[in-house]
Image (cartoon, rainbow over all chains, first blue to last red; front, side, top):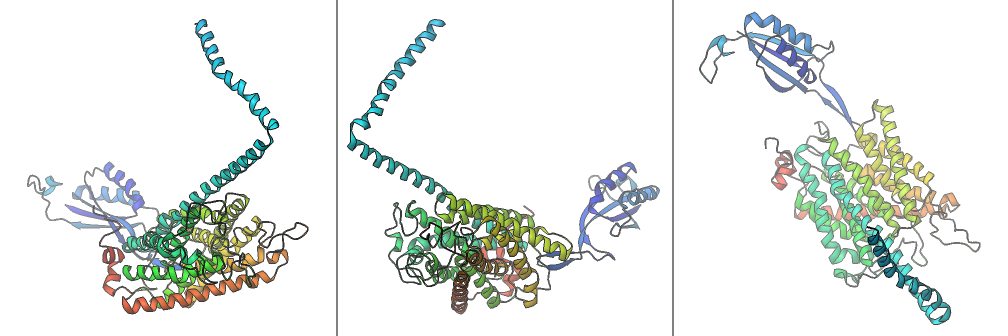
Length: 112
Length: 475
C-alpha cells in the first residue's frame, strides 16, 4: 500500500476530485492548509501599508491506495492540478505498513 | 338586474344631493360677510404654517434617524471590519456605548451646555434636564419644528463625534477608561465647540449680533470632524502604538463589513448634511446634492491616486475616499454650488489619501483607523474651502443688499476675509481639541489607566473586555 499526499491550489480541488473518481479512487481525505514554497506568498496593500502574506491557503489531499493504482492516481492529480504557474503544489508518495477499518477490524488492502 | 342599477343610482343621487346644495352656500358666504374673510385668512395662514411644520418635522425626524444610523451600524461596521478578528466586538462596543452614554448625558446637561443661553464659549444650565425644551419651536434655532426635534437631531451629532475618535485608539484601550474619557470629552470639548459655532450668542456664530469672526459650519466640519479628528491624533500619540506595530500583520479582518459600513455612512450623511438645513426646503436639496457630489469625487480621486501609485484601486481606498469627501463637504454643504462641491471632494480625496497613505508612515504614529487623516484633515481643509467657495446665491448668510442681491459670503463672491474667519474657527477647534483631550487623557490615565495590559491586548478586546467572541467558529 502507498500513501499519496498532494498539496494543491484550492481552486483545483473540484477537478482533482473528478479526476480521482475516474481513476477509481473511492475515498480521499482533504485538509485545509496554509503554506508557501519558493514563491513566498504575495503582498497586500491597505491604505498604503504593505503586508506580505507568506502563508497562503492550500488544500492537502491524502489518499491511501494500492501499488497497482499508484501511477494512475498520481497522473490524475498531476493532470488535473497543473496550471503551469508557480504555486501549483507538490505530490509526495510513501509506503504504508498497515490499514485497519475501525468498523469491522478488516486489515490490509481490504480496508481501503 | 336593471332595477338594481336604478336603485343604486337613486341612492347615490340622494347621498350627493346635500353636497351640491351646500356648495353654493360656501362660495357665497365670504362675499356676504367680510369679518368671516379675515377669520378664514387667519385660519388658512395657520393651516399653511401647520403644513410647513409637518413637512419640516417629517424630514428632521428622518434625518435624526439617519444620523444615528451613521454611528450604528455605519461606523461600528466600518471600524469593526478594519480591526483584527479578536477586537471586533470591543471596537463596535466603543461606538455603541456612545449611543447609550451620550444620550443620557445630553438629556441631563449636554443639550443645555451646547444650546442653552450662556456666554460666548459655552451654554448655561437653563435647559438642565431638558427644562423648557418643549414641543413648540425655538426661533433661535429652527422656527418651524418643535424644539424637541432640534434637540434629538443635535443629540445624534453629539453621539457620533466621540465615536469617531475611537478609531485612533482601536485595539488597545480599556473599555471603562474609554467610556469615562469620552463622556468627559463630550461635555468639555464637544459642547463648547458646538455652542461657539451654533449656540445662541456663540463666539463664532454668524447669527450673533456684532460677531467678529463669523464661521460658516453648515453641518459640523469644525464642530464634529476637526474636534474628533484632532483629538484622535492626540489619543494616538498619547497612547502609543499597538504591540507589534508596524512589524506584525494588522490587515483589516473583514473588508466586507467595512464596505457595508462605509456605504451606510454615505447614506446616513444625507441626514447629517441635508438635515442641517433644519427644514425641508431648497437649502436641504442643495446640501443633499453637494454631499453626493463630494463623496463621489473624493472616492474617484483617492482611487485614482492609489491606482497610479500602487498599481491597483483597492476597495478600502475607494470607501476611505468617499468618507473623506463626506467629512470635507460637511462644513460647506449648505453654502456652495454643486460644481464647487465636486472640486472640494476631488481635493479631499487627494489630500486625505496622501495624509493616510504617505504622511502617517513618515511620522510613524499609530492612528489605527485613520480618524485623524480622514476626519481631522478632511474637516480642516473643508473649513478653509468653505471660506473659498461659499456663495451668497446658495445661502445668503449675510443677508441681501439694497438691490436685493445677496451680500458676498465667500472668496468666490469677493469676500476673501471669510477664509481668515474659517481658519480662525478651525484654529479654535484644533486648540480646544488638543488642550481638552490632553487634560482628560492625563486625568483618566492617572486615575484608571488607559492602556490595556500586554496580556489583555494580546488576547484581544472581545475576550479581555467583554468576555465573548465576535466569531465562534466552532459553534
